[in-house]
Length: 291
Length: 335
Image 1 (cartoon, one colour):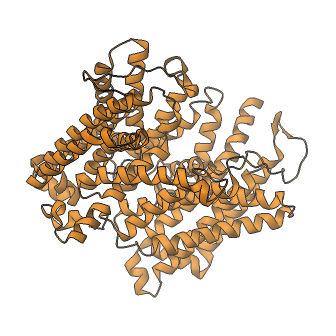
Image 2 (tube, each protein chain N blue to C red; image 1 turned 180 degrees about the vertical axis):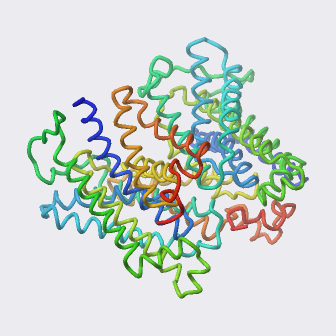
């Protein structure tokens, strides 16, 4: 029993990060129609910038804020340099290649800036693991889950209760109609990429203390986040979050069976979901196209 | 093949045949790499440029050809002359089997699915230690020797690789001008319209995917024969990406683009690797990643027809593009 709880706690922590990445994928896809292959690189940027600044002696909260701002800026730059000139002009294939190119360039720049050695980040609140009904739960896990919950609440508020959120949802629902009522889809594209950069980086900052931060961590996290988004149907923000959490749990419970093949599992799930339930595994309003 | 293509292939064959007389060992190794990657890249040009189906997992087919060929030669002691075709056939068979379900997907989904397959393949290489020796890899793969009185392993490898590369080039040039090529181009333009014209689009997509898998497997088997050592590390996502960059930089609208792109990237990478430490002391191959990324994005944005398209436009007689309908000249543009 305590073993199961242990795996569940690990799974929810991991799944929270996937959920944040998945949320970024869905937001950008809904507004611009592009799958942003650089999504995982935002997580890497968040983790690496925070690690670098903490090592330079900066207090953690300030380092975290700067890291998130840096990744948001990277998202904005990707939109302005890569996507804005291409949207509406290039096929999905062309858009894929642009974001792949951007992701690779970001990874290369991180390699030049920070080298191949992984960085460590101290836990936010060091101390012994918490005891949860017999399962030892890492304190950082609590930070990850709590931070994710707060971010999701803020994003929900942004989407549902602000004018910008309404404009974003309008673009996702119908681009032409959104333009007719005065929404500028290009500006909303910029907003969606900046937002997804910030959300991904927050995941990176809280994740860094329990894994190492390294220049190449973004690829796998990005892909896992995409799997989460596909499980949720690729068009629904709540679906993406649920999909990310589900994948995290699945991986955590598969780890004791075979840790080596754990990474392959996500892609088997991905291909199975895409072929068998291309609209995502959830039914009803939960999966309906909305962000 | 047009008459121009025949002449060009003939000239290329003559240049390769004479290369060992004038080129250094290092230059020969660049030509060998160009041939190896060119074979795989031409497969991607047919898949991505003609039929517009993307693959981000072609490193897996390359690696599969390499591992099947290398393992058969070292474990079973079979002659390289048999293991190289076996590697190509194994990749072809796997491409056929995975292609049928995966090619039902479109656009982003297909990209992610092929990417996922590539990662699953690399995980298997690392984990199935009994068969593959895991992450540490294995060496001492016997090489094929040509029945020719030529000195030097580099020359023999050059001839073997380019024998295959020229055959692949000629076959592909013929293919794009024949009815299969027209069918694939029609599918690239519009799958719905092709289906209405009576083309079995699923079958055609599977055929071109299988062929490009076979090309990649052949290239991989020749690679194993050339480097004589294999480990899972080179056959990851970055390599799949490199192959795609080669295809895009060379030009997706022409089979020649595969060769041009492979040559350009090999030379560029080698030049960077050699001269970067002089410009930027302490740096090694790290800028490669940035270069690949920026080259891919910039080429797609600014020159979707690649270097071949650029050259053709520069010469003012877009020969390699002329036979294709107007839309196929811009394989990445929204239809």
